[in-house]
Length: 481
Image 1 (cartoon, rainbow, N blue to C red):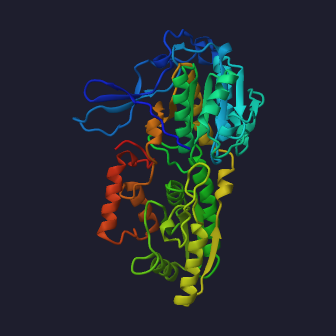
Image 2 (image 1 turned 135 degrees about the horizontal axis):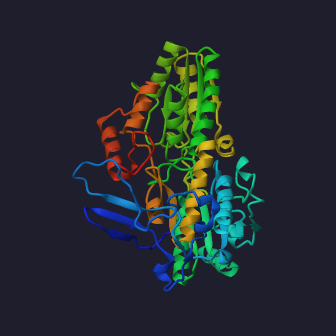
Image 3 (image 1 turned 90 degrees about the vertical axis):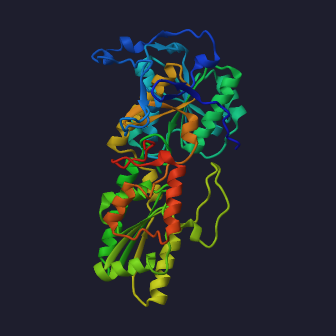
């Protein structure tokens, strides 16, 4: 799709090693913009709040684990309402679009953007773009009001529909301009955010007063910088139910094996957290940790050992794990540019069956569970609903304050505005040389499958290349080490 942004980072340098990776503002490329008092100052809901406006100089530190001589480091602009806004309520014509795969919480984000615009800022004109990016130029829109979105958070999926691909910058920006839209809220994963960055660049080139805001969505939790992505907690909770079912099946038969395949194309966070949460998993396989089947220290040897010792076993495998071992590699991509994967769950199930029936002459009872689409389609949990609300409100505050070309998300528990390029520069992955993976290994007692010194060195090298991918004590993937 050619989604490359040419925007130069907006960097502010301060004393003692302070660096602010700032986000663009409409006033950067449109001079002499008028400002208006923030309607929130007259909002009864905020009358009891001691300080409801964020100070202009408030920033959020990316690194909170420091030594006495550590430079202050990278910061991001703090999210929240500003005292002056750059849009009058009656002049705002906003739109919302959802792109890519489904994820718990999409409808909650849509609902809260609409309600925040209406209840906080008095904005009445909000369009829903139907069917992803292509909906901009296929004229598919629906009017969104607090009444029409009132109960949608109780449903899975997205009321706006979604799609992969369909990205054509000129057509999208032409549609935004022709419709008089001046706030664009784009909900999607890394590919979608790359598209949002290019849309912002084209809007900036045309000199349009349009705020472009991204809300990062990925069930795999593979977006960097932010603490975690919405829908992740819900996915882990639902994945644990599938693991419980696999455990019941495995313990009910002699030499029973329950095998569960979970989401995780490039990042194994769902598999890792669901494994630790369940306490019933004996082996967790993720894309970041290579494994092998045969020979000393291999998976087959470990399975046989566990079956002889306990009589049953539960294995969790992320969809992207072990792809290099599948005989036929699919050199194809979907409309979003993601590599199409072979079904590693079915493949490894057959490999296990063949090994024990033909080579070990050992009877096993293997049950394979793939809950992928069940997990993606459910409504978000209570904690994710709260998270989605804060994301949506932070996004609306930022757009009204004139910020643009940014993604919103929590950094060390505080909501911040993050430049698109930081979200799009790499993928967040499990670091298998960090403590959280060690906690998993101590829980499952599985071998590390790092059979040689080279494997360990390769893992350490990956960590050096992705220094922002360390894990905090609470285990969330993070940019703070």
